[in-house]
Amino acid sequence: MNPSVGATGLIFNEPLLWEKGARGRCGFSLPRRDVAAAPLNESLQGEGPDFPDLSELEVTRHFTRLSQWNFGVESGMYPLGSCTMKYNPKTNDRQAALPGMAGIHPLLPIELSQGALQLIYDLERYLAEITGMDAVSVQPAAGSQGELAGMLIFSAYHQSLGRPRTKVLIPDTAHGTNPASAALCGFKAVPVKSNEQGVLSPEVVADLMDEDTAGIMITNPNTLGIFEENIRQVAEIVHARGGLVYGDGANMNAIMGIVNLKAIGVDVMHLNLHKTFSTPHGGGGPGSGPVCVVEKLAPFLPVPRVVKKDETYRLVEDMPQSIGKLHAFYGNFGIQVRAYSYILSLGALLKKVSQFAVLSANYIKARLKGVYHLAYDQPCMHECVFSDKLLEPYKISTLDVAKRLMEMGFHPPTIYFPLVVHGAIMIEPTESESKEDLDHFIDAMIRIAEEAREHPDKLHAAPTVTKVRRLDETGAARNPCLSGR
Amino acid sequence: MKELSQIVLPKDISYTQNHEWLRQEGDEAVVGVSDYAQDQLGEIVFAELPAAGDAFGQGQAFGTLESVKAVSEIYMPVAGEITAINEDLRNDPASINTDPYGKGWLIRLKPDNSDDQKKLMGRAAYLEMVKGKQ
Image (cartoon, rainbow over all chains, first blue to last red; front, side):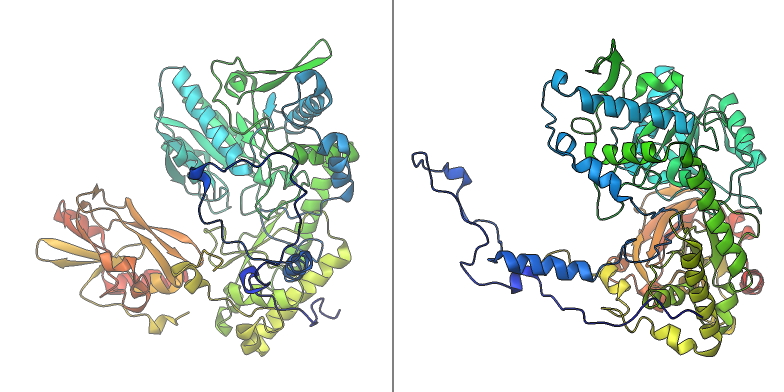
């Protein structure tokens, strides 16, 4: 047995910024005034904002200490299911930091922005090739905004045919944000139950699909980590009644370069560059959620579009059927540079990424099967879903397993999702982890299952060596404190 | 989590497959979620309920319960019009956990027809169904 990755060590407490510093202390100095003094407009006068008075070192220590409380994929394994917390290679950051990339101003004239426009244009072509779709806009700034763009396109498409529709079908194994995206566009989300194999049955979809349903939102592979093998039939049923098929690209890391999404019937999809294409993930962004469509839906893409003509690139706004503008300028450019760098540095090896991601998940599934209850016992894609069923006799729940994993040095997997599995533990190792690291994680999971039988109290008390113990999640939700002071 | 033997299931109310309960009180009925449901959901932090006057069909979602684990929909045991909602839950959603059949009630409604109730379960049938889930 390998020793646990987690150990204790000196970690610093740190107060709120307002509790530090002293009145008048300052971390910067303004240059000498070189223009004549002018009175400030009265409407702008009054009490200033409540900023603490701090030195540069106080600020630096504050954030350095906070960063030491943190856990990221660069600290340890981060198998958060359906989030694809893969490692972000440093070369991507290097390219994004090149002065020509980082310093470019979005208001530069088009003729001075040709390089950036070419990068956007090429990235959109690459993403089209990887997914099999016809046209792409990298403008949406997050997966959720990509989904919103997709649903706006659903809506605009049906309107353009003069028969707006009111409902969207959403499987119970779809990504959690799907119903919200549909509802934001005024659609009513109609839940679709998955079958005993954890996938969609064409018959169930056929029963629900009607002329008032705009289409279906499918996450493939779904949140059970299972490939929707009936997707072609499902798409045929939806198309036959005039609907569209939306593909949530949250789990694209399982099928990159392997599945042609257009060929299996997808009309609109989004990608998460911060998941599949290795741009920074979490921490509130910036993100990028490109929206990809088939030819007939290209006129609805957000404006402006980057268009190439005679070896020059320009921005085209004149698209009367477009859903409009989603983001200032053209999305988060620095993130697009990172994804572009990732795609070019891997090339044809992108397919290997998905193969390794799937292999890693199946390895974990095979070794932990029997130790934890496997919700759906069949080959999985890039993630596998266990539950706490075998631990129930010892009064150990999924939450206890997650808390114990933390002090063993691992970020917990996604827990209690998908909802179709009671006490779900959803593990997505990604392609980033070596076999040794996968084994360390599996050994930790096996040890926790043994502890559940032999020392359940240890699990109930966990974590004991982390900076903070169990947080009062209920208290935080019932009485949230949202202000710094 | 509770053992099955610890789950409280009063005899004088009806239950649904989705773990709501219904108690007839004169022309109206009171609806909540069962002790089993609250135990499975964990500590409830917010209840999103409809407005008085809203009407729903049997089995239709009329609101959601948010716990630290997840957000779950709650469904109408019978078709009818909402006559009142439990306003106290806004400040005290925990009463759904501590007193699911009393202070933790969710809505009062006026049933559309009495036939709907025939599809509900008594205590014994509900207990059997819950056992099957274990």
